[in-house]
Length: 165
Image 1 (cartoon, one colour):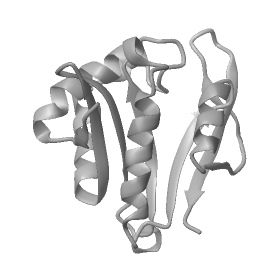
Image 2 (cartoon, helix red, strand yellow; image 1 turned 90 degrees about the vertical axis):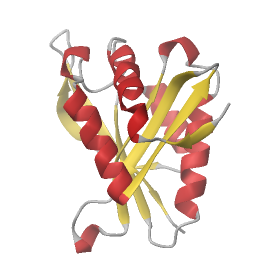
Image 3 (cartoon, rainbow, N blue to C red; image 1 turned 30 degrees about the vertical axis):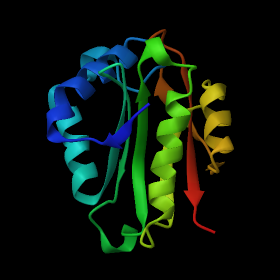
Image 4 (cartoon, rainbow, N blue to C red; image 1 turned 180 degrees about the horizontal axis):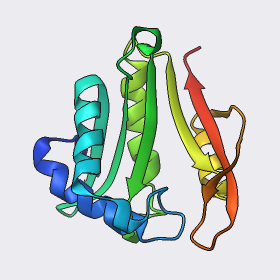
C-alpha cells in the first residue's frame, strides 16, 4: 500500500475521509458536522509548514491520513503535537494505521530536531491506547471528565507521548 506525503490536491479526499471516520461512534473527537473544510485545510497547512502529513492509498482511493506539527514557539520547537490519525472504516483492522504510524515515526526518528511527539486518546478507546503503546508512546496522565460523549456521559482524555531516547 503506497504511503506518501500529502499534497494540497489531497485536501478534498482527506476531508471526505475525516467525515467518514467522524461518523463512527468514537472515531474522532469531532462529530461529522464539526469536520469542516477549514479544519482540514488548517491542520494540513500546519503539518506542511512545521511537521508532516502522510496519506495511504488503496486501489486509487485515499484510505488513511496521519499528521502532527510543531507549535510556533521556540520553547516547543523540539515537539510535534496534535498527532491525529484517521483510517477509513472500510479498511480498519487491515494494518493501514500501523503502516501509516510506522512510516510516520521512521521519518520522525530520521530528524534530529524532533524529540517528542504528542497525542491524546479517549480512555474508553482501549484498543487505540494499546496500539499507541505498542508504537512506543506512553501515558502521561489523565484529563478527567474532559470528553463529552454523544450520550451525555463524560470520560477522561489520556495524553500520551513518544520521547526520543
